[in-house]
Image (cartoon, rainbow, N blue to C red):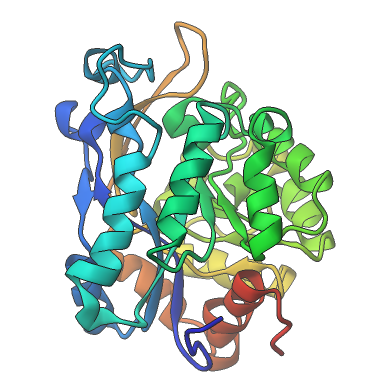
Length: 335
C-alpha cells in the first residue's frame, strides 16, 4: 500500500455517489459525498475509508429502475455499467477533494456480466489517471449473478490478479436471492484461491458460512451495517440466517454480537459501516420471480456503528479496524 495505514482506524466499507433508483422511489439513503464522509471521519475519529460508488443506475432504463428492475436502456445515460459512477468517484477523491489525501482508498465497482470488454477498457483508462485499490461488486443492485465472474466476467478476476487487487462483495443468505447468495460467492472464491475476498454484512450471521470463511486464508468478513443486520436477525427477517443456522450471540445488543464474532473469528472479521447505508429503507428486487421483492425499514446511525467499535478492548478494536483490514487490502500479514 502506498498509503500509511499503520495504527489507523479503517472503515473498510463505505459509499460515495447517488442512487437514482432510491431517489425516485423515495427511499433512504440515496446519496453521499467524499466531503460528507470526511466530516464523519473527523467527528468520530475514523482515519481512513475504503470507498466505492453507490450504484450503477445511470446504465439502466429509469422507468424500469423505479420499479426495481435493472433493464438496459435503449438510450442510456451511461453507455457502460459504472462508467460515470467510477469516473466521478475517482475524480471526487483525487481532483475535487485533494485536501483529504490519504483518507480515502477508492475501489471501482463492476457489473460481473454485462458489457465486460467495455467495462475493462474503462478501468484501464481510469487507472492511467488515478490510483485504484480494489473492486467492489453488489450483484443484487445490478441484478447480475456473481457467478458470471467465472464466465463472461473472468476478465475482472484477471485484472485483480495482475494488480494484486482484492474484491469486496455484497453477500447474503436470503433464500430467494439468486444474485449474491453466499453459496454462489463461495463458488467464485473456491476457484480463485490466489485472490483476496471480503464478504459483506457478516454473511447474514450464517454460522456455516462464517466458519467456512474463517477456514480460508484469502477470505475476510466485514461488519457493515451491523446495527440493522442485528435487528434483522432479532426479527427473524429472511435476510438474516435462519435460527437453526445462525451464529450464536446475544442479538439484543449489536455491540455484544460484535464482541462475540471477534472472539470466534479474530483474524477474519473486519470493521466497516456501510455508510451511508447503515440505515436502509428500501424496496429491493432479490431474484427473478414476481414475488422476489423485499421491503425493509431499518434505521440506525453512524454513531451506532462507531459505538460498537469503541466498545471493544483496544487490542480487539485495532485487530478488526486496522490489522485485518491491512491484511485484506495488501495481502500482508500484520500481527
